Length: 97
Image (tube, rainbow, N blue to C red):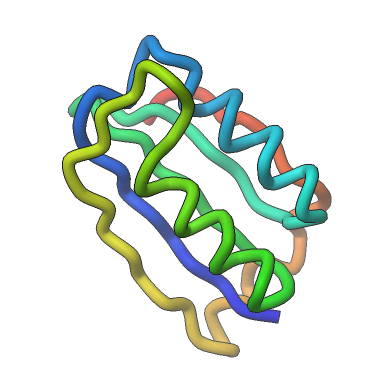
């Protein structure tokens, strides 16, 4: 299992980015969450098999139709950090932070 925390910048709110990412994560059997940020970005926590996580990271650089991704900041989570997210069951959409 690997973990990645993403911040996605650009035109990523109001275009179905969270819903698209949620669907893609569920399709890949990932755990974690996605939410809008008050600054206009989208933030996501991805936990799961390395190949599936990397596929979703790649998807996040494009997003759904209508999105215009300018940049994605990726933070790799270490084993000790992933252990702290063990309570994540499934993948969900969280309130704006």
